[in-house]
Every structure is written in C-alpha cells, then in structure tokens.
Length: 240
Length: 113
Image: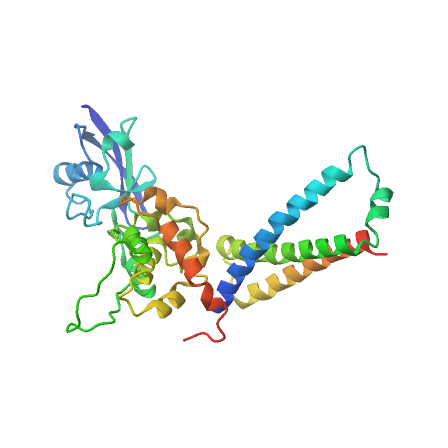
C-alpha cells in the first residue's frame, strides 16, 4: 500500500493540541515507524519513547485512534483503514511532553502491590524444584510475560474513576507471586492488594485483557486475587 | 474502611447477589403463576395475609436488596461522584437502613394480619 497518511499527533503536556502531519505510507509499516518518520524528517522536536522496536521492552505504548497499543507491533494497515491516524500519549498517566507519558505512578503501584519477589532461601540453598505442570505454576506462568507497557493501565476505566486503584498490571504481577511457591511474602501481598484500591475495585470490564499486547488476562489474575484474599475477611485481626 | 471491611463488603455483595438471583426468579414465577385469569388486590391480600412462609421469604428478599443495593450505590458514589470517606459511610448506612425499612413496611402491609 502506498500514498500518504494523515496523522494527528499530540503536542504539549496536559495542555496542548493535535498537530497534523502527512507521512508516506509503506507496506508493513508500524505506527512507531510513522512517529519515527515525523521526528526524523518533519519535526525533530517531537518527543516519544521507544527502545527495542520488537515488542519486548514495553516502552513505546501510545493511544492510537483512541485505543492504547504497543506501537512497534501495531501495523498501520490494521488501525488506519481510512488513511488517518490520531496518536496521543497513554491515558490515565501524566504527560511529560508530546507522546511521552510519566510512568512513575504505574510502577510505584507495582511496588505498593508488593510486586517484588521475596525469597525464602539463601544463595547456598539447593535449587527449588517447581513442577511446570503444578496448578500454581500454571497460574503464575499465565501472567509472567508482562512487559510493563502500561496499555492495560491506560485502558482501565476503574483507574480513571479511582486514582488509588493499583491497576491491572500491578495486580497481575502480584498474582504471579502469590502463585510462586518460593515466595515468602504471600500474606502481606494479599493485604496490599485487598480493598478499595486493590482487586475488589475491579468491575471485570476486561479492557485490560482485550488490549494486552501479550495476550495476558489480568482479569483472571484479579479474580484469583479476590478468591485468595477471602481468608483475610474472616481472620480475627488484621496485620499492620 | 479497613481492608478487612472492604473484603467483607465484597463477600456480602457476592452472597446477596446469589440470594437475589433466586428471589427474583421465585418472585416472577409466582406472579406469572398466580395471576393466570386475573387477580385483584383483595384476592392477593386474602392469600398473603398471615402467610408466615412467604413473609419470611420476602424479608430475606428485602434484606438482600438493602445490603446489595447499598454496597453498589457506595461504589457508584465513590467512583462517579468522588464521595468517599467517613461521611460517605454514614450516608450509605442510612441509605441501607432506609431501603430495609421501606421494604419491610411493604412486607408488613402485604403479609401482616
């Protein structure tokens, strides 16, 4: 496919406007290719973020025609049927400049969800034996390939409604650790992800699952966390 | 509200949803069955007044509505209106008690002696 694409790109931060560009259309062209063309040939002041260009690093996610996507693996042909593209920074996050979203709150919430592995063994201990076909490992494996791109976070209405909500990625990460038999932080992690800011706020809208570029299901992880936190409700005393 | 409280509310929401599912089906099926060929207010009251079993059923129905509806309204108030915190908790308790009283008043009117 050849011809020209009409591209609107967000310029500015919280306040700003869309700027129009015309970009040559090519076969197998990705949305990231379009943004890179603008920055290298039309306006070098355009700011955006990318690293690997092959769907591994999770840094190039943007809103494309109103939907959050990883731009390096999103073909223009799939999203610009009429030859028009509107490219904006990810929703639900502050904008640093142009297409660069500030990811701090996204990753801070991973920390609040205690998304860090807490080992039970020392380096002198023998390797833990974890059977790949055990139920817990299958659950953990289902969510382990998250690349932290923030697409699910930008797609989630609950994040927009409740700014404290931890979001699909942080909860998905917590669920993988809850199912890691080597991890020692289960109890405190379940307390961290319960309640109004945690898994119980999820309305199962499933935008995260629909749009996750790695085809993960944070919705399933959150449902698992709701079940796992059930015990907290019937314990006599809550741990600080 | 404490995390434990939030989890308890979630459990209550789920349990009352199950109760309401059954209650609504029984309620609708009974209406469809009872009004075949027409049924007046006096005939309805003639069948319901003093019926302890049906009164108990509707007390359960009303209490499930009060609990389930209030938890749902609490979430809507928090997410759409930003109404959270202690004041919201007090208002929601009042809403729940109000819903329960209105429902129980109807139960008394229909099933009372």
